[in-house]
Image (cartoon, rainbow, N blue to C red; front, top):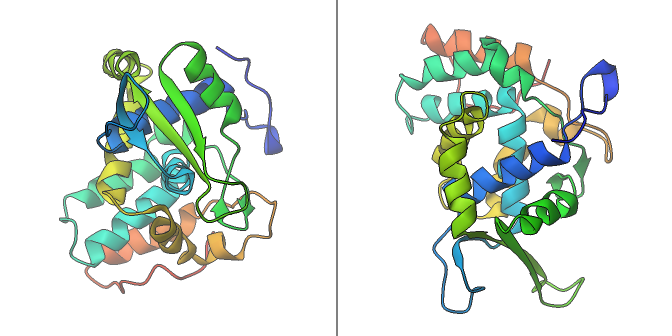
Length: 231
């Protein structure tokens, strides 16, 4: 396991191992079926890094994940039972321990995946392919889960510490479904704090704002928009 470097505000920065674990569980839970043209030994694939980055943002920002749950509840797409899930995301210490902000760039939240993916490839848990010409619309970074990677996720889910990732990714998969990356980014850009972050700066938390939304929805006095300000 990597040492924990200290980030802004004295908070530990995410390690390469933590990043790799998030990518691994996202591949397992949110990956699509492979085809004959995919690398041998692959069992699932994420064919768009934009989609991966959007889902990783929800994995590492529990307040934004809770905000999206609240929007889905308000729209009638999720049942009221998920109000408690959103509340736990805001109040439980465990999600906060896994809060690692991401900087905003031209296409939204982004953090380079090369080191994390290299770690997964080293242990035979995933493979990585680039297709198309750099700068062209056909250029794609694609990730593939191997059978060993799927087995590793199954073991991770049994671990009393690491099973947090397996539980969190279930919520991300519920929200992302099979939505393409640019559409997921559009949904995230509806949050004003996310959209208003200057390029290169970390996207700030919105915990206080989400608490207000949650309280209003719980009291049945709530609008469906999530375009308000952050904390």
